[in-house]
Image 1 (cartoon, one colour):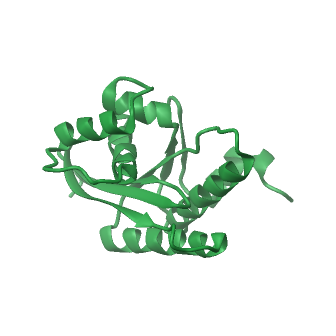
Image 2 (cartoon, rainbow, N blue to C red):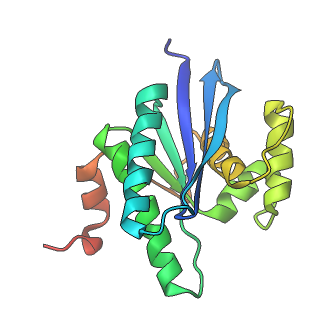
Image 3 (tube, rainbow, N blue to C red):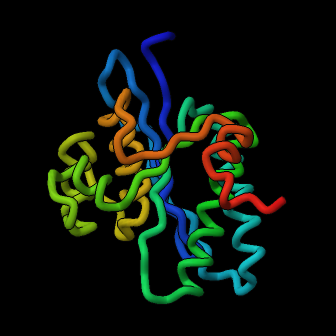
Length: 184
């Protein structure tokens, strides 16, 4: 139906990848799912990346999202951690792009602001607000999955706006918007 769409939200990580799905029906959110992918049991970083890619493809093939919203890596002091987080985000994005699904990237503060009105909100505050907005009966013990759900809800709230987010509709669009990041 033209008034319906599904948004997959992803909080990338190499220890835990959180994700959530919402369906938009007549401009209203309907909660579908939230969960997490536990990666800490794997020692090999490249194996973790492969699993992130495969699980993201599986989510796409199962739920057929129309759009993907992904949390951008935050800037930290540990360069190695940032590199690993960027790779995790990259393979999740590659999975969506390989299925020609538009991807929008949101800064963590923008997601928190969209959900709670406070860009410095805690994970617990974001989770509680999502519980209220979507009528969730209970919250998961690990809040990485609610962070993924928050990315999807943020995307819905920002539908039609382009301020503070980056969208890519395929590899060509990504390359054109990021020429300085492409090695020739």
